[in-house]
Image 1 (cartoon, helix red, strand yellow):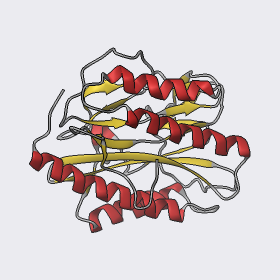
Image 2 (cartoon, rainbow, N blue to C red):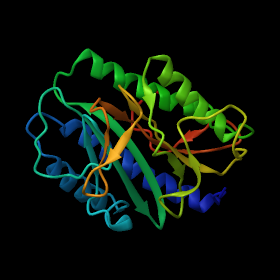
Image 3 (cartoon, rainbow, N blue to C red):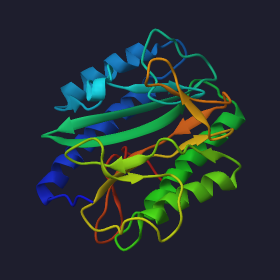
Image 4 (cartoon, rainbow, N blue to C red):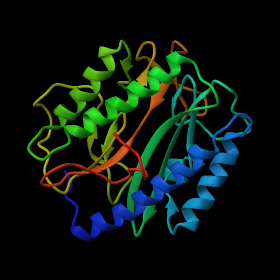
Amino acid sequence: MIVKTSEQQAHMRRASRIVAAVLAKLKNNIRPGISTRELDRMAEEEIIALGGCPAFKGYQGYPHTLCVSVNEEVVHGFPNRRRLKEGDIVSIDMGAIFQGLYGDAALTVGVGVISPAAARLMRVTKESLWKGIEMARAGNHLGDVSHAVQQHAESFGYSVVRDFVGHGIGEALHEPPQVPNFGEKGEGPLLVPGMAIAIEPMINEGGYGVKILSNKWTVVTVDKSLSAHFEHTVLLTEGDPEVLTLQEGELG
């Protein structure tokens, strides 16, 4: 585990506010007919305008600012000429750097009018994230966070992706510890004040099996079922967890 200094925490707050602001703008611009490439361009311009740097672009060779994953795409979807259509669900994942510190968050948005089943999946995935956040308290174990996410998602008949997990975050986009969305209460590292973790449930409507496409990045459900993804960067304190990437007006 890596405990953040007060200065690091301050820079993470700024990076995370940039992430939250850009995601809010993207959410408001998602509509039928817009291309995922347009969203990527908008995100990069806005991150820079707000004084940050894109965290994903160039990371381990990733070529874009955003990950834009549509329908059965779980994570790491490439922005391209594809135009979103009515009824799609689209997961937007992005990070920003400020003074060498990172913020990272994701959300899933419906395009126009979506099916009740898709809306339910999105709602439960977001609820699962907040169930995990509620357990991100000093004195708990990481497994308490993981178990809370898994229990909530599976209680609705959904499956939790096993091959990709959340992570510590700070001076690097991915730091120890890994933060699975499945696990047992009381297991894993002890949580202490000053830790920062990115909790990010990836929940499938069908089975949890996934595969990586030929571009070596984009992950899809094996059974082609819908997948939703929500993420927040969370700082552990002496009391309630501080959700650094919370959007203005957002409720858990």
